[in-house]
Length: 471
Image (cartoon, rainbow, N blue to C red; front, side, top):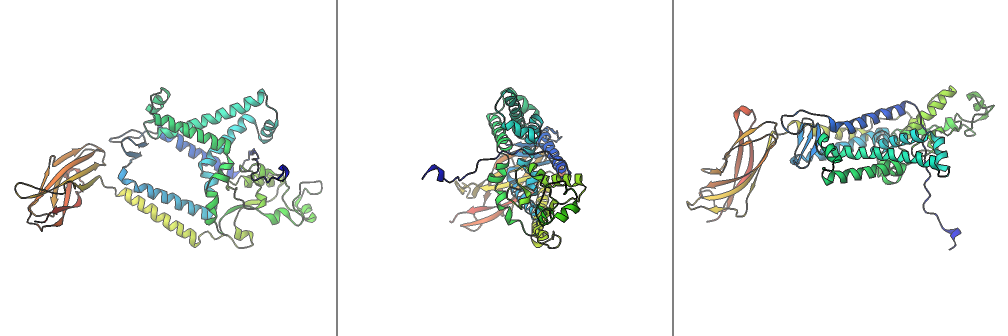
């Protein structure tokens, strides 16, 4: 086969140079970005007073196996909360997507937020879209090296600050920063910061729209959540094209009346909607998988319509039902109501679980090697391992007792223990009972941990078994 007949399986990437735009959706995106960046970068530095524990508002203490989130302390046994949070995020995504399409992609996705900042840096250093296009096409010289070099250095700086900030969530931020730059931080801190610096730089600076188009799975499965009433960013083809298609402003096509007589639509084919698109699509070609619903094309078109004194809405939010001539989109449809119902149930259960968190945990496991011991006085002894965890911010004194097994004795080295704030203890216990209880059976027994009366806390019981051998 000759080279001329070879099939090109992959098209070369076309560089995208988004143009700046002003408008209500662009302002909304700046507001979301400021909020997201403010929370992410400033939260590790927020101090928080606690009776015990670190003075950082949000801290994920892997060594101590505790997550501090303001006044909430999450322990390993509370890991099911993570499942609840993931479920809430999933159904929130389904609910929002069912109503507003890819709103998450356009406004809240990390890729979108960081890419916006990287594009802004590029714009500040290299200029507006025409200047950046000229710079990319011109031969390499000192000026080009300087501008592109400064751009990449600033990208790397933002990426490094992003990676370092993530690390600060896992230890005391002020101390960790000093340790980091003096070479005393743990290896994991440097590895994590390097990994996130690299990925942020590559994804937001180099790959950009390719992440949304080729790498992100959400663009593929979003169609499952779309229906004819889901809001989408769309071009009003009937208004924009007219009978004879779109046409630029000409000597005889400067008013809507003249254009209507000529059979052309309101679209003047300025290309502004294409130039501002961060993924480089033409919204006039219909709904496309690359569209992230950022709505910047709406701002661009509205700007042009305002300058001409024409009605806005040539590009705007609509739905397939409306495009097909139907009535207004139905927001409260069964699928959306179902998402909302599950979401509210999941949030309610999580809030209830956190609000009813026990002040201390008690677990009892039977030691099975050996499962029993026959004592010299004829009694049977079973051994147990007790784990108790103080979740309160103050000391807690506990007294242990058993019930449910007649004439049984609880033998512990420390029948009364005092736990420091957030302290965990592992204790050994032995239960001794007469063999008069039925042979060859397991008998339920409850081990009870009772706090001192001045604590105001209720006792906590854990049911286990007592084994009596045959004979």
